[in-house]
Image 1 (cartoon, rainbow, N blue to C red):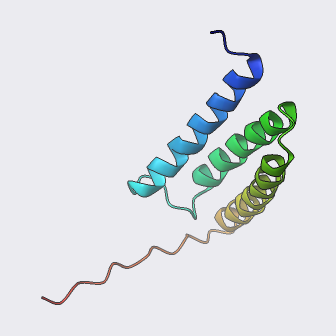
Image 2: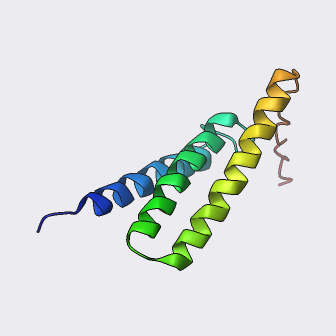
Length: 97
């Protein structure tokens, strides 16, 4: 079975999206960092194009919205960084035993 170009593109987009998700879950990237938003922007753009190619308009809608929010977050992250504002770190609360 041979994969089409669209299927390869969709698989690549999904893999990139999962890289960002796993990095966030493992604490390597935080959602407030530009790198995280950039990878989400890139992957959601690829997946939106893939959804368009396979005529899956429900998923196209989802990934266009994902792309828009990733773009907005990236702009906010870059603006804050250029102004010298560092993202807030979440403080882990100690459990009482």
